[in-house]
Structures are given as structure tokens and as C-alpha cells.
Image 1 (cartoon, rainbow, N blue to C red):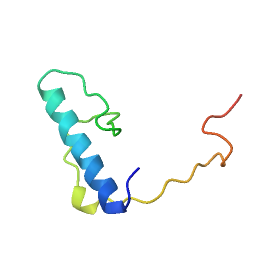
Image 2 (cartoon, rainbow, N blue to C red):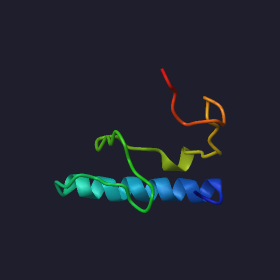
Image 3 (tube, rainbow, N blue to C red):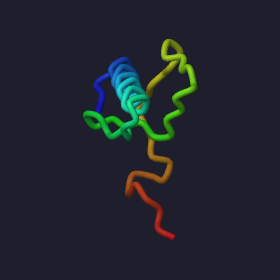
Length: 69
């Protein structure tokens, strides 16, 4: 967990950059220090200076992280 929105954004940027380097080297990106990248789009130019971060609220309530069907 990050202690501030800036720390969260920096960690996400770092994980993305490292995953992009692994991808370009022909290696599969993995979770890095607890942060990971899903759906990597190596051809996208992300606007990190416009990125925001906020605490995540579970849309399914506080009792669980998965739905039971």
C-alpha cells in the first residue's frame, strides 16, 4: 500500500516502466515489489503527469472481494 497518492503514482509508473523493459527484452512481465501491470500496451504513450490516485473503494461492500454466484 502506498502512503500517499504521489507514492502510488510513482510505484505504478515504476512497475509499468520495468514491465515495458521486460516486454521489450522478450521476457514476460511479472509483479514487481507488490505492484504489477495487466494489459500492457507497449505502443501507448501514457500521460503520467496527468495521472491521479485515490483510495480504492470496494464496489461490492466491505465483506468480501469476490462475488458469489
